[in-house]
Image (cartoon, rainbow over all chains, first blue to last red; front, side, top):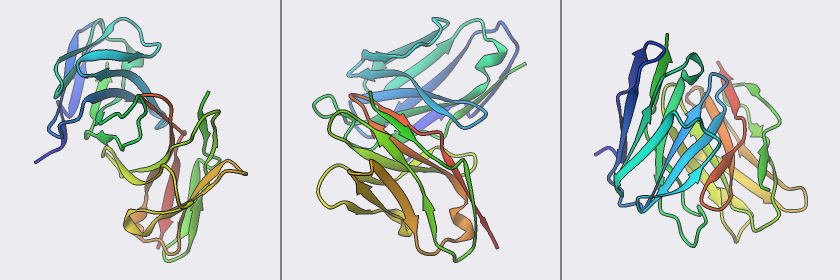
Amino acid sequence: DTAVSQTPKYLVTQMGNDKSIKCEQNLGHDTMYWYKQDSKKFLKIMFSYNNKELIINETVPNRFSPKSPDKAHLNLHINSLELGDSAVYFCASSQVISGYAYNEQFFGPGTRLTVL
Amino acid sequence: AQSVTQLDSQVPVFEEAPVELRCNYSSSVSVYLFWYVQYPNQGLQLLLKYLSGSTLVKGINGFEAEFNKSQTSFHLRKPSVHISDTAEYFCAVSAANKLIFGTGTLLAVQP
């Protein structure tokens, strides 16, 4: 049983297209995250949802829109893809206590997005 | 604001040798620190974490880290590395609802 799963694993698309990445966790956690890892392995948080509510929205272009239909799912939709969006996108989940990420975050396997 | 600095972008080491990966943090509040490992083409996996209590924290795969408040450090150590330890290692600090990651250190174990 995979704890945090993402689909697809690889995504190759043309500039200007719209694409979605799906994430599901079966750990019963209340908080889910999207991270972007660039070619230099730098990992930066993009969004976080707690109980389906957006709690973190870093300085991400509004072409990126997260959606959380329920606590177990957090999807990422990207409009008008650009070359600079090429990266590996990781979904993660955790149980947040008193507003602090005390507990470990469990990461999905990543989605490698290549924009041509 | 919390931040993390990993001083070495790459650490080459021979198999069975000891290794230390350095991490320094900056935080104005209580500190919760983590080390994650990322094997090639995989997601991140928790190695160990410091929340409170003993400053020496033991993790998986024989790794340990020591929290040093006076030096604001949380260095990761292993007494004898294996080829299979080759991976990217990330130090992270908890900062209200999120983790802030360092830039990573590639541990390259050579035979």
